[in-house]
Each structure stands twice: as C-alpha cells, then as structure tokens.
Image (spheres, rainbow, N blue to C red):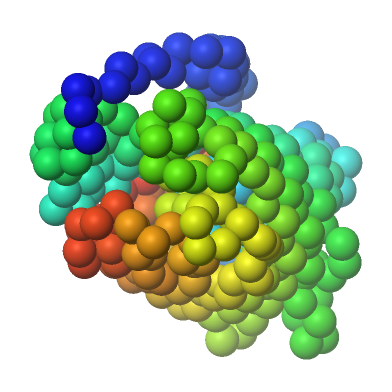
Length: 315
C-alpha cells in the first residue's frame, strides 16, 4: 500500500474533555466506600442524596462506544445510579487484545433523572503487526470519536417487577474517523456516520436475570473504525444485538452478548461478534468487567478473538 501513512495523535478537544471530566469525577466521588450491610439488596444512599438511588449493577457497564449497557452493545439502562431528580456519571477505560490488534476505548457518560444519557468516547485500534503486513507500519492506529445520546422512553427495569413491560430507550451515536486519508484509499464512502438504535431491557429480580435486545440502523464498518459504507453497500442496515446476564450475587453478574454487523467492503469481510463476560462491582463507585471476545475477521485478518478488560468509576 506504499509508504506508511502518518497518524494524527488523538490530542484533540474530545481527549482533553475526557481528561478534564475524569479529574472532576475523581474529586466528586465520595471518599467513603459502600458501607451498607451485605444483606441489603440496594446498598442505598440516603433518600436526600442527589446520587446513588438505584441498585448495584443496574446501570450496566460501559460499552465500547461509551453508552451504558454491556461491553459490545448498549442497553436501555441509563448511565449512573441516578433515579428521579438525581444525577449519575461514570468514566471508563477499556482494553481489548486479539492476535493481531488491540483496541483501547475511554470516555465519560452522564445520566440525568434516570431518563437521559449523554456520552463521549474515543476508540483507538492499534494495528500492531497487522499494520506492517498492510504497509501502514507497526505504530499505525485507527482512531474514532463518538458522541452519544440516549433517552428512556417508557418502563423502569427495577420498579416494574409486577409487569412484563421492559424498559425501552432510543439512542443515537455520532461517529467520526480521524483516518480519512486511509479510508479514501480503501474506497470507503464516508469518514463520519450516525447510528440509530432502540433497546429494550427487562430485569427479573426474583430470577436474577436481565435480558436486552437492541435494533441498530448503521452503515459502520468495524463499528466505524473503517468508516461508513463501501463498494458493496452505502445504505443503512438493520442489525440485531442481544444480551443475557445472570446475577450470581448483588455484586457479580455473568452473561453473554451477540452483535451482528453489516458487510459493506469487499476487501474486508466482516463477521458478527459475541462475548462471554463477568462484571463485578466493589460499590457504586468502582466496577470491573472481564470477557472473552470473538470479533471475527478484521481487515483481512481471520478469526480475531481475545480478552476484554474494562474499569469503570462513577456514581
């Protein structure tokens, strides 16, 4: 593919905003740990508190695109532990490593009144030796900025235990790749794109189960890291995403996820992704997620799979 292309260091306004928000959150999180007794189901904050009114793990974790949910897919849950008239927020740092690639994503999310969520994230895909094989150099990275917005339409995953009605939310994600020169050379149609999704989450506390299904309209190639649209298609495609989680305790959940993806580029066949995860929370301020991920083919490299680890801090 010729001489290696130069990659712009991701030091733009999104990175600075994430850094400043992380500093603010580190100051805002109370120093004391969750002190509720182990027998308490809610580990509840005082009723007068402006934060922390929901049960442990009911904000999900941070997805690779910044929205609250699972690791691969957003859920209808809102970021943070806020209820009505409360505010919640978190920051996350996620790392995925496969045979030929590594992905780092970090960002922040804000939840208001368990109704609205706003998120910012940046993804950086380190090409490693795959970059050498493709003529890009071992230090080449694909970088993407993501701005997300989600609103809960109806239902309450925690309170609606006497109804089969799920919590339903609609979301939008604005994505922009910083690797326009490469994308043009590959025949990708657009450097930026917008995903639309509708999620339904149902929590069954008596059975310790959570289900989520998400329908996404997207043109994204590899989540947007390889741009949007291609020689095979430049149309929106409906894609299915699903999650199932089982709560082993109030602090530990295990589960699986599945995510289908469009196949827009002839040179880089794309396959669906899935994972098996375990999410553990120390309290309402610190949580850790680990997973085995199967991402399929990525940019001509076959059967990419590996591990996923994510740390989340917030309230």
